[in-house]
Image (cartoon, rainbow, N blue to C red; front, top):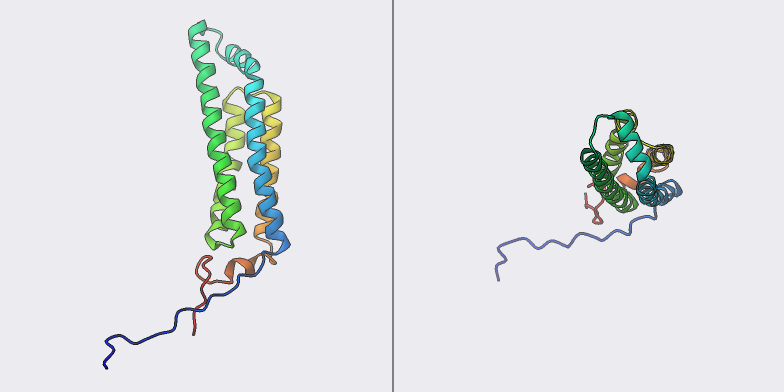
Length: 172
């Protein structure tokens, strides 16, 4: 009997090592970052009256309709931004917890965006102290995450599969 294709053994399944403590801590902090984003949104919505006052101080010529529109627009932006941020924190927690090598780079890029965005948001938009404080705490959580996932003890966990986090080993 002739076999047209060579028979090969299926790739061996490799048990992925448990993440080191640095990665586990980073993942926990990512979940905390997601929770802090929700807290930030709640603080922003609770202090919406201060936002209205800040908009009025920045634009005293606004009519009540313009003020109402600006207030709702900024509140909408805050809600959308918070939902995106929560999704990003949860996505990165999932990917880093599984050792996806690309997740460290994406986490770093998101941290850079957050670093650039914090002063821009603080200086360009009317913000109250509570949301600014929560924003700084979220940034500090992000900094701790970056330090942990780029720690030397975290590196082997991300490289163990060699293919970006898959679970099959290559036979060489």
